[in-house]
Image (tube, rainbow, N blue to C red; front, top):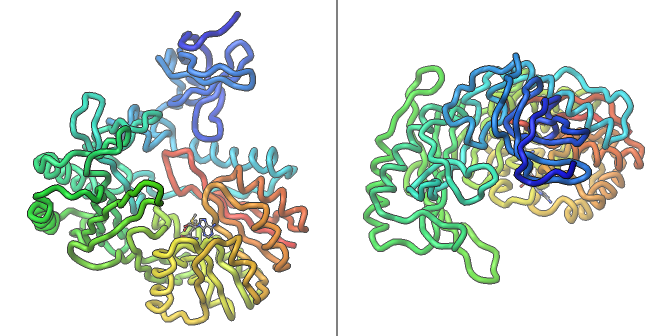
Length: 467
Ligand SMILES: C[S@@+](CC[C@H](N)C(=O)[O-])C[C@H]1O[C@@H](n2cnc3c(N)ncnc32)[C@H](O)[C@@H]1O
């Protein structure tokens, strides 16, 4: 029978596909449905029909999987922030582990990939140290501050609670929303490129109890901006909450960032510190007891799950220490976290990173922690590798989701490092890059999946490759 868009059909969900959608089959056709899990029987309306696969929107769960649990958050079904709150955590972990195995088998052409036990996260809620909330309008065109609705880039879900960062961060969101509503300043409308209020970023030092708030706006300031922003600062200073251990937590930094857009020019961000410290301090303590402090500037990348980052980096250090290393490259080094932890086990470490804020912070972090055998360079890994004279025995790479380019892989292989540790937040691109690395003689020794993002479809892994 010819299927049509909008047609509603009923079928069983068999598994979770890469990316987090449920996968079922209707008349032999593979159909992806968001918000479903294995064991569900669903009615769903086709939104995309192709020979290779189709997509459908969930209309109704006709019969619930016996594994379903009650989601913690009242916004779960509408918000795109979490995908798996209805699934027991152990099940999430096994699905993620299987996805890593599948990626390396299918894309990496590895038979029996050496995937070890997945390392779960002790806290399934309130684990994030950074959240980005957007200003905008909800479906009723009312002022809103929250998350973009999935699949609808410009509608905002007005979030009055979120279990990802902390109770304090939800309190900040609610207070800021009330204040900003009363100013009369208009939220930015992406569809027409007009409006003032854009986003609210909240960063929280999980080990230091510091909080950094960054209010992001357009650069066309309202007339009463100076007066109202002072009032805003005073209000933020008075906010106080409790951390997970019941200790008092306050806002230590408030920034205002203007996004400056000019036709034909890449948009720029201009930050003004409204009060407090210039950076957010966070501490990481590895399993071997090594402890470092990090100063984080607003635009610098820092792993968003502090406690699980400690587990991730402990795994990197564990792999690195299996051999003696003189020179180590830390590529895509962000604020220098991995390189700084490895520095005491090497003669010299070089970190390369594109983001200037991150490199500035990395250099400060080296000084702050009295580490002097590390050099940080700002620029594109693909370009800067051409200038490197030293020959590393170990190269650590931690690229963004899209992974490496062929050029980067070729250049890296020229250094003839014995060991590569590949930290990846996307098993598909990691497996693709691995297939290329085998052409240069590298072989996978071990893959350890680490769950950095409970209740989401993401999975990180640490891979040990030897030549
Ligand atoms: C997944 S983060 C890893 C950061 C760091 N290793 C950590 O654990 O915090 C990836 C980093 O790669 C940087 N990056 C992206 N493309 C790059 C490129 N072509 N060259 C250098 N760095 C790049 C990003 O700015 C980001 O800081």
